[in-house]
Image (tube, rainbow, N blue to C red; front, side):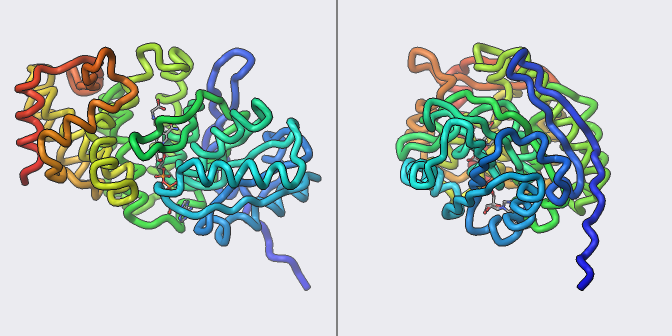
Length: 370
Ligand code: NAD
Ligand code: GLY
């Protein structure tokens, strides 16, 4: 019987996150999963692949075959799907599987999936036996443009999103863009929210490129997606290089997240996707930026138009003013009980600041109505 030909890999970009002895590569390309040459980025002989019930039937066998061809022993750990699964119970399931199979300190954890699997696997790697190597194999657009890079790992607590976690860098990020073919349209849009974010806070030219190319991105044009992933990773890697543990600058990557996290927690995790909440949150942050005189109203209109063109919501759920404020008070950026916002000053640059209560209340009122 002839074996099917493996598609040949094409590498679009080979970037680096420069953090001295903890520096690591980001490889972005098509069909990386099929080629054992990429196994050299995965240290050790034993590998535990953490994934979920949606991604496992799609890509686990291929990743396992690739790693086994490179001489590695693989242990699959398949968790339930969804943001609501990003919790202590599932973290414990990872530890239990590792202990039951006598995985030692040289076992590498590989996160095969979206941001939920990536964040949870990273936290497991940071804490199992006080730290084992891990590699990100992101399979959603959101994970390929954002969550797999930079070493933020976490699980949710019922009282707040991503509240329990650690900074722990992977040894490599291997982003196979061919995996995006199976992604639901809604998930593609969620990833585009973080792409828009990168343009809005740092690179007005990239924002303009997105305005011109959003239809191609929505149609999953390979070249357009490769550019968006590459530029997003470059921007994120540069911010992380300058401020790995969010002493200051890195907080700008939370543009849209103060409002977005409140939407996610207020509606219940999983009701709106993280990227949807961030998309709407960016519209709210832009509205507040205009009210404080930082952003021109026409630039806010451009943000609303781009978020809408990416298929994301631009009108927030009406949680009630008191609940909004209560939810935003549980945010890691806050200091002395004061809510901190990432605002645009102007488009293409971000500032971290508090906001007067009347302006914030006006934004909440304006953005929860069509
Ligand atoms: P997700 O991990 O839940 O993935 C979205 C859905 O797509 C899931 O149902 C998943 O099983 C499915 N899926 C994954 N890959 C697929 C594929 N190739 N084909 C078909 N289906 C696929 O969500 P996400 O949007 O990737 O990540 C969101 C999470 O990332 C949130 O928990 C958020 O807090 C976190 N996040 C972390 C960082 C960070 O810096 N660590 C940054 C941004 C977001
Ligand atoms: N997604 C925010 C950060 O990585 O800092």
